[in-house]
Image (cartoon, rainbow, N blue to C red; front, side, top):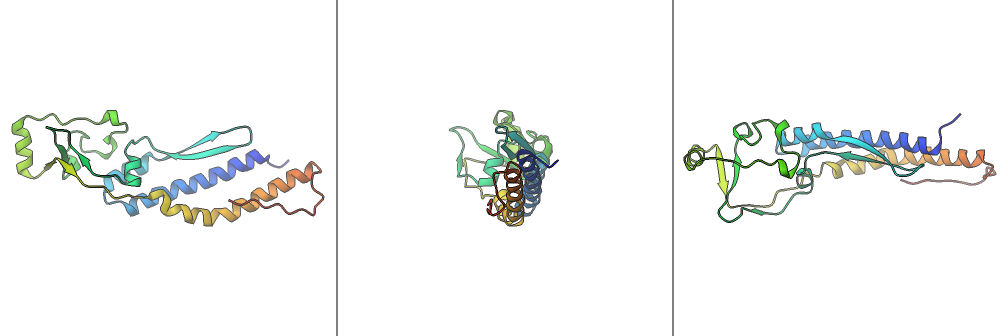
Length: 189
């Protein structure tokens, strides 16, 4: 007995989702200027398949990092609140907010920790050059790790998916005597 149309869709979806995940992970390292952040995001990407209804499914490549959309799409300039500074460490190993490890990058915006330093500690870190404090930062460039590989994914799998799906629908309709063998069925991705 052959696969049902929904089983065929789910299998094709998983094959394409696995390829999309692989492409995104590869592109992250190719496009990144921040290897630690890219590696953390790369390791966090995963696939989730959602059943839409009895014959339809969707596959999503997800991450829990709230900042992933800014990393992917870029962002505009940011200003510090009045009386505050935006603080960065030249070497993430020196940043106590993430304990120097990419695995400790905050996942939710509420996980972002504030830097709690005395005036003396703040001044010492600035003078040493290990920390940078500013009132404003410019826009951040995009790292479109999904878009870069998506065209290649469509070109590679589009014709295969269309052929498999068209054959599945044709076989299903023929089995139900809804086709007399002369019709052409084509599905395009």
